[in-house]
Length: 141
Image: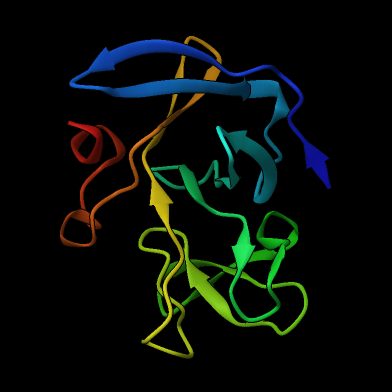
């Protein structure tokens, strides 16, 4: 597993919400995940270079195994939905919404994420459930 080691720094503020730098673009692994810290949150960042909206940020915490492991999961596609498979028990989580594909009562937190001049930035406010289909920039607005 690759883990980002850059010290987070705030880059922008809007009504108390902030884009936080968590790493550099060269920390990303094509079609894979990396772990990062957003304050006291463990975030898994995935890069799918073949997709239009190529960056995703989910909680790194798998609620089935109670471990911070989702960044180590295998990235794939289920019925057109980009997903990550939890490394231990293999549940699939949508990279767009955090929804578990096998259990609709389970969803992991999703954050807006973007590249800003080669810096990976995660918005420190999670995406609200009603705004899960928005782009990263729309979700952070």
